[in-house]
Amino acid sequence: MTAQTLAVNLDPLAKPFFKRVQIALIPIAILFAFAFPFLFSNPAITSIAMFTMIYLGATSAWNLFSGFSGYMALGHAVFYGTGAYAFANITEHFHLNGNIWLFALVPVCGLAAGLIAAPIGWLALRTRRHVFVVITIAIFFIFQLLAYNLTGITNGSAGLQVPSPTWGAATYNDYFYVAALVVALFAIFLSYSIRRSRFGLELLAIRDDEDRARGLGVKTTKVKLITFMISGSVTGMCGAIYAYYLGSVYPPFAFEAIFDVTIALMAFLGGLGTVLGPVLGALIIEPSQQYLNLKFTNGGYALIMFGLVFLVIIRFLPEGVLPSLANLWRKKLKSREKEGSK
Image 1: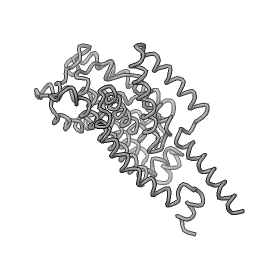
Image 2: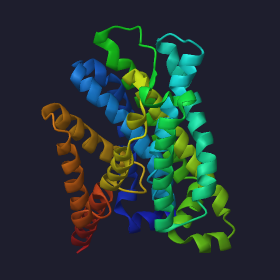
Image 3: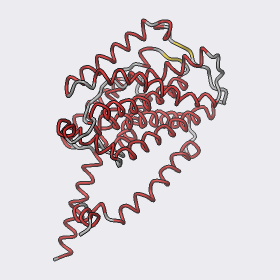
Image 4: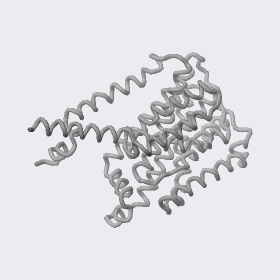
């Protein structure tokens, strides 16, 4: 019995038919995503879609580290804000005008966030479990205070202005949506590639038992730090797009505590440690949050929704939506196979 046959027997979803369906759905989903602003041109809808893509990319990046390694980081807003301030500083110091070519700065801002992630990861990743969570939260608040006080870089509470785009209001959201979509697809591709690589297996080994992984030869510190930097870099790219869209950068918006709670909740809802789980979580939560913010002027409704969703996940779907549905489908397929064999 080959390994592929054994896998199919253990997991009915591993059958070639389901694999072919998955492969066929990928290009359809990508084409629909790029065609979305042409199909739904309402500015309110494209604005929600743009923010959804930003959070989708950030959630996938967060899951790439926390979901695969098991280290729950609650300080990724540091990299989001770093990307935003990097974009604002570059455009201001070089006196750049707002145009489509400014999106070329997004990877540069991501690189800046990745460099910031290096010393943070070197320090924080020396700890584990709840200590690591507390340190990432503390680092976030340190950077938030620095944003208010390093006036030479951030201009303090007055903030920094970003050049306004030159394209018209009718297509204003479309360019930002496409840029955010490209970053989101890049984050998903990274997650998929790493998940199926030897590097990804080393991350999963760290998540399961770090001491044993180190004993088997995994360079745990190096693997964790590289993944942390990659995750921070992609998050910084999302922050740069947000800064360009907003037109200005202020400390409370660049370094926002609810950002970390949001991306973590999205990953948990869809399925922590999976590739498509964070995608589903972002597609559910962010449009819901944006709708509530548009429908009700009181922003507290979105926070109440976050709390309720988190409680529901813990109680009924501890593994997330996708893993739970996949397990139910596997049980159903196995029961059908048993009935058919009788």
